[in-house]
Length: 99
Image (cartoon, rainbow, N blue to C red):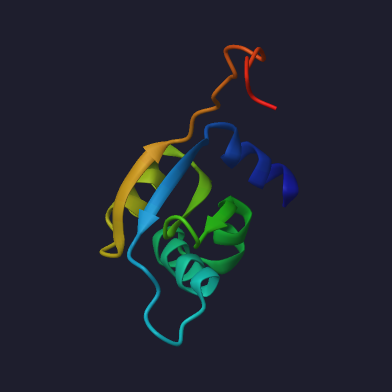
């Protein structure tokens, strides 16, 4: 079963998914996982796709999604925006005057 999951994730990219905040009394992570479960059709698949969940600066999560999974996530009513995740590189390590 692991080989099938690895094959499915081979065409996946990582995305930042911005969602509505969790309703009062609902844990942030449970709310976000529920959105992903609804989009992907199962808790096991959603947990495998979830990379990280955010709650302090933004309400959302990062997940590895195939193109068809990406479209399913975008169609969830609680999803506000989906952006490709990007790795940023430090252009210089020379910070004059910064200690």
